[in-house]
Image (cartoon, rainbow, N blue to C red; front, side, top):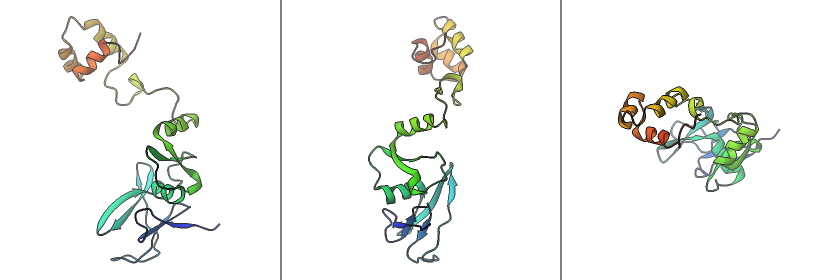
Length: 171
């Protein structure tokens, strides 16, 4: 299988990226050899490389470099999507530009993310439980919202939104 190399957008004279997701140095530099394949590091499951131009170093996701080189500059409001959901597979034919919403829908359709929303206790950042919300609703009016917020470790606004039924719609 032949590997196709194209210039990295914004670094055309310095780096090239392949359709297989590899990045190489195009020109020699201080302590760097032309044609050398760059080492990739892990950044939250995504592969990244460090690019340097005019002594300014920048860490960039390989999926972004491949998508821009092989599918054109990033359209406004779009992000690269891995069709097979494998963040490490940065082959050009595995990438496409999607909006954030389309990307999330793709993950749900593919079973990567459950179709259920991450509301209430299922949200890993939730500070309250459904039981606490029921108690909060019972004591609002008897105890001040500010005091409830302090006791529960949340903001007064969170308590107000619970009272108004805008957050934590539990039965």
